[in-house]
Image (cartoon, rainbow, N blue to C red; front, top):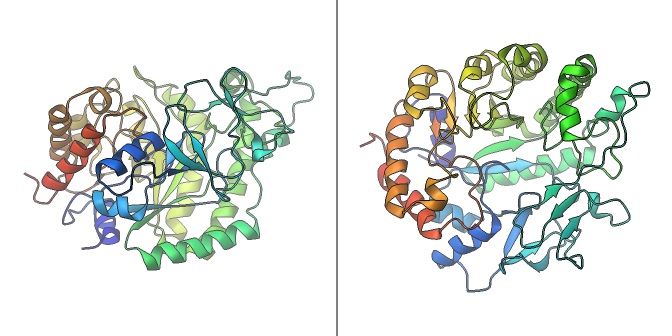
Amino acid sequence: MNSRERVKLSLNHQEPDRVPVDLGGSAVSGMHANTVYALRQALKLDAPGTPVNVIEPYQMLGEVKPDLMDALGIDVVSLGKPNNLFGFRNVDWKPWTTPQGVPVMVPGAFNTVPEPNGDVFMYPEGDRSAPPSGRMPQGGFYFDTIIRQEPVDDDKLNVVDNLEEFTPISAEDLGYLGSEVERLYTETDKAILGSFGGTAFGDIAMVPAPFLKHPKGIRDVAEWYMSTVSRRDYVYEVFDRQCEIGIANLEKIHQVVGDRVSAVFVTGTDFGTQSGPFISLKAYRDLYMPFHKRVNDWIHAHTTWKSFIHSCGSVRALIPDFIAAGFDILNPVQCSAARMDAGELKREYGKDITFWGGSVDTQRTLPFGTPDEVRREVRERLRIFGPGGGFVFNPIHNVQAQTPVENVLAMFETVRDFGGYPLG
C-alpha cells in the first residue's frame, strides 16, 4: 500500500496497513528549522554544518525533504501558492545562521541584517522601503507580527480595505499549482494536502497582513476581536465577500489540480484556548459557520477533497458544529487543553471526523519529557485514535525549537514499531 492509498483509506474511516504519518504537510504540522537540522544530523542524512531550508519564515519552519520523509515514513506532502506569509517567494536561497547558531538557507528577500540591538525585522514582499511587518527579538526563535494599524475612523471604514488580500488568483499562481501538483503526483506516491488560502475567515495570523506593505482597514488584533461584536455587520460583510472570492478561486484551482489533492486546508482560525472555547457556540454559528458551510458544500459537491480545519485549544463543544459545517478533518487535536480527552473525543466523534494530530503533547511531553515518556504517550494515542481509521499521526501542532532530538526520534520510532494494523 502506498502513502496516497494509506491516507485515503484513513480519511474514509477505514484501516490501512498502518497509521499514516504527516510532518510538513502544512504550516501547522511542521517542524522548526533548528529541530529539522538536529534531526537530520542525528539520522546522518547530512554532513555537519549542512544548512536546512527555511520554507516558512514567519514560524521558521524547516523543509522536510524526501530523504527525511523516507527515513521517518512520512505519507503527506504540501501543495500551496509560492509566496510565504511575508509575501515573497521562496527563491534565490542564501545562507543565514539562526540566533541559536544553526546554519540555514533563507529566501533571497529574507532580511538577514540585524538591528544594532540584535533584533531582526522582516519586511512585506521583502521591500525594506516599507514599514517592517515582523520582528524576531534578539535570541528569538520566531517572528512576531508588527501591528501597523492606523486609527480607526468608523465614518470612513470601508469593507474593501479588509479585502485587499482577497483577490482573484493570478494566472501565474495557477500555473505554478498546476505544474507542482503534476510533479508531486507523478514523482511521489504521497497524499497531497493543498493549502490554497483565502478561506480562513478571521484567522488572526492573517488579519494584520504581514504580507501587505500598507494594510488598511481593521488590522490590530485586539481591535479585530472587539469588532466581531462591536462591528459585527462589517465583519460579516468582509466574510461574505471573502467567501465569494474564495470559492471562485477554488473553482479555478480545481480546474488545474483536479482530484489529485487528497485534502484541502480550509481554515486556521483558532476557536479555542487552553481552558475553553474562545467564542460561544452562538457566535460561531452566527458569524463563522455560514461561510464554513458554503465553502465545504462547494468542495463536497465538486471535488473529492476532504476539508481540513485547524483550531487550537479546547474546541470540544464546537466539534459537532464543525462536523455540521462539513469539515472532514480536525487538527491539531490539542489533548492537553480542557475537555479534550483523547478517548472521549474518539468515542464521541471518531466516526464523523478524522483526527489529524493529537499524537503527542508538544507543550509538555515532547519538549520536556523523557524518550520513554514520549513512547508511552505515542503508544497510548495510537491505541485510542487508531482503531477504525480516521486518524493521521502528527504531533499537536508544529514541533518547536529546542525539542530534544532523542524525543523526536522516540516519537517516530514508536509510530513505526507500533502503528501497524492490527494495532497492538
